[in-house]
Structure formats: structure tokens, C-alpha cells
Image (cartoon, rainbow, N blue to C red; front, side, top):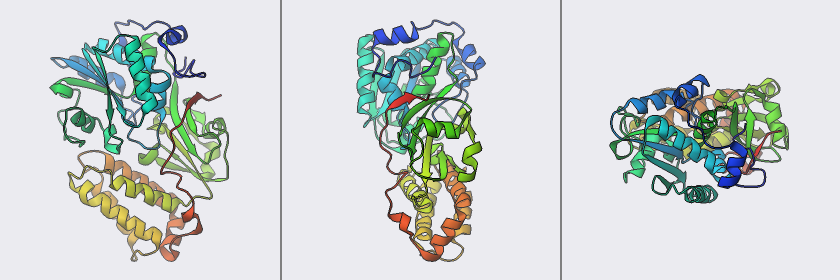
Length: 393
């Protein structure tokens, strides 16, 4: 059974949702079943879902379920598409998780520009008469909105900035209650497990040099070439494929034919094909500059390290950097890694280091000669348009 089943003709009403997926389950052993199926979070961190559920269930006092559909990763549209097309499956998962941990309140946080997702969730909540228990809240369009402690701070009326841990949200979150934070895709899988089935699939946003950019549902372990074919095939020869978004890594053109992607490799559920007409160093520099503008600015790695790295990288791409810039970028990246209040710097410098290695010759050419002709091409990684969803063949 697939997450996007029945959505080929549009969003599922409650009646159609029940016809496709059947009535919600009532498993008393839901946490154990989630653990048995090995479900991991589909928001990027891939943390075991059952571990978080069990931690929340063991905590004393009132509990809350927070559906994190903020989708701060700008290359991803999968959670918004799921909330738009199959909102009842997301609600089923949230309600099942709430039952399993004995939570009374459910909050669904959706990025503010996800109009179709917000409308779909509001309609689904109204259809089921859940207005007294489920609250749907639009949140800022920002990278940090996807970070769970920053999101909780915003929902509590504070600044959108991450908190130091401990305590973790499962110990003290919304309203100082133990709060289970999961993204919509994770909870949709919980809904299927609650029905006694498991879908070994993943939702991914595919973009870049493909003919049909959009959200696909794929089986884990599929060849990368099959995924690109399901997105209509390539529009030009590829330099590489970015897997996992702005905190992900690159697959070189020579490895595309043999690459297979399991769910863990997909991380935030993003695959972007970088065509030969794009300038990889410019794309990476653009991303690093954007990420530097998204930081909370409350610790050294974010306030100082990220802007300095982004500035030096831009100098390299523009051909204005001093000798030794490459080594300095690697040194500064090592300095910020693991030292921030959140993981934004860690993922950013991992993305940078992978790009510096794969595209070393291109970066060296830029350092010598400055911008290339491809630098004038439209950006592939910023921005990426919102996409509709469909199952891969």
C-alpha cells in the first residue's frame, strides 16, 4: 500500500480516503509495531520513530504531538504534497501516535506558502470534526522552521531560534509538555502500520535537469537511473546528482548508472539532477550564501563562521580569492562542525566539503579565471518550484 494511493485525480476526501486505505487501525501495540518495521523519521535525521514515541510515552504529565510540515529544506515539496493530496492519512498517523503516547493535543505546523497543504488539512480537520483537538498553524518560510526546537519556540510566541538541549522536546516542548515531533510522511507510515500494513516506500522531490519535476513515491533501493526515468528522463547529460538537499551529498556522473538509493540515503527526500549546462561551483556558492542568511546568529559557528565561509567561497568562484583559499575553506569548515546550537552548520559544511572534492577541477579553474559562461545560466538549486505528486511506475 502506498502513501499517495488514490490521489491520481486529486486530493482525497474522507470518504475516498476510507475507501482507499480502509478505516483507521486501533493497535494496542503500535509502538512495538513501529519498532518491528524499523520505521525511521523521514524529515532528514532518520532517527528511529519508535524510540521517540517510547520516550514521549514514558514521560510523566500531559503530552502533545507536533506534526512538523514546516519543510525548511527549500528543495523539498514532498510533505506539502502529502498534506495536500492525502491529509487524512497524515491525520490518521497523528491520531494513532497520540493514542499510543496518550497525547491530548495535536498541532500541525505548515510553511505559510503551502496554501494547498494548509487548505487540505483545514478541510480534513473540519470533515472529521477535529477542530477541538487538532490545530493547524502556518509558520515562516525559513530553513530553521524545520528545526524542532526552533519551531516549538515559534509556536510558543518566541523567536524562531533553536534551543540548547537538554531538555529535548520529548521531555519538554509545547506548553512545557512532552512533545513528540514527527514529519507528515513519517506519520503517514505510522497510519499504515496501525492498519497492519507497511509501505517500504519513500516520497522524494525530483528536480533539476529532468522533464517532469515533481514528487514521486518510490520503493527503497531503486536504481537512481530508474528514478530519473520516472521523472521523465534527463533533459541533458548530467554532471552529478544531489541527494538529500542542502545538507546532502553528490553522486558523480560516473556513479549514476550503478547507484541505488535506500531510504537512509535519501535523507530529506530530495534528488536534483545537475545538468552539464550548470556551473557547479556557482550553484554551491549560491547555496552556502543562502544558508548563511538563514542562521539564527546566536552562536559563533552561525554568526561568524557561516558568513565567513560563504564570503570566501564566493571569492573563489569570482576568481578574487588569495592563494590558499581552498585549504582555508576546509579549515574553517572543520572549525564550525559540531559546535553550533543546531545542526545547520554541520550539514552546510558537509555539503560544501563534498562539492569541493567532487568539483575540485572546476573550483580551481574559477579561482584562476573567475566566472565561467555557465555562471550566467538560471540557478538549478535556488529556487526550485513547488511540485505535484505521483507514484513512480
